[in-house]
Length: 272
View 1: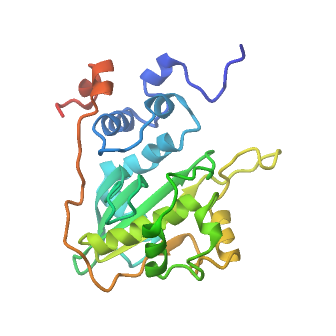
View 2: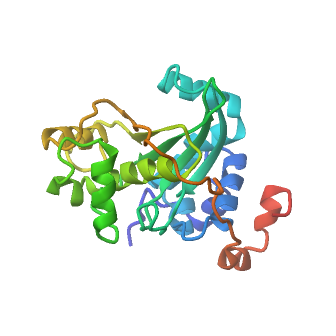
């Protein structure tokens, strides 16, 4: 049987070869073990698959989690003058997973940067990272809450557009709606959504699925659905905010990983 070149051996995976440093490996393992309720982690893919966008997300944003001053400089470079500093970085985060007051589904962001404005008001930058994965996942379907948020957000020229409700745009649409709902239910004064993927050149066009997420946005614009151009979707602030909820969301110990790997906590150098 021919070995798959993008798949690490178990030995190399256990040594953290899919991550740029031992510290990032420790962070990824800890985040997978102590995940938010309902957060989806495929630990086999995370640690062994060199083409995993989840591993890529940790390699990119794990550095920012470890150095919030660096994170603040990066956000200033990407979004000049919007935020004064970054106060925290969360992974596989949903401010309201499966909560009907939000989108009522399992939509989540790969990375979620907590920020602060010059006026010391809280904000966020929500991030979706793609590497070679496609946008074909349709989630759990759409419902009246998605329609309501799609209209209320004011992001779309045609909030009823069928293109929004099916691949390849549905996932991005859901994330825009979750971010907007977050502004209505959380103590955030502003928020933005960023989509990132690896730019590549290939002798075989179409071989990789993700490409540049900018093409997805162009599809939105071409369909007349999306009003905003550019890599940043900056969300309008709702006229009224709901009651503040716990920003970090509920956390719990993921027993199966801990049971399978009793050395997990030794990786972090501290008890959970």
